[in-house]
Length: 158
Image 1: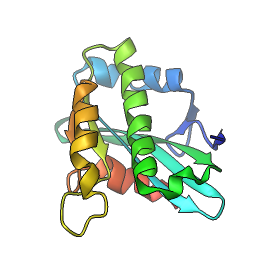
Image 2: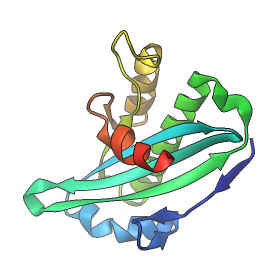
Image 3: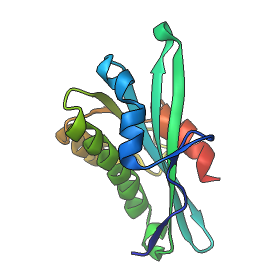
């Protein structure tokens, strides 16, 4: 699989490596803030663009910010919906695991862009990815509650 990182983690002003991102959000994590991590993707003429988002949201403390990372792949394997969804989940779990390796008590909820309604083409994947996320030790949300993936990450796939 050929991949290319288009951007480091960004907040639309600053760019961060994975480790710099964790340092940037460390005080939020240490203060008990919940992290919402989700990914989305879009097929392009030459492959697939993936976006992973890390959102910090706490209305009581008036915190609402997010960081995102774009990754492109020229692989045609992502034309298969299951491959695309599994890579989205893998990206989310990868950054969640990186965060808990530094902060084992981090409160992380992984948002996955799959739905359970009859209209959803991804409904057959819900239980599989739910088991993967929960088995990895993270909380799980899917559509319509997976706003980190279906709203924030989706915005940057375009």
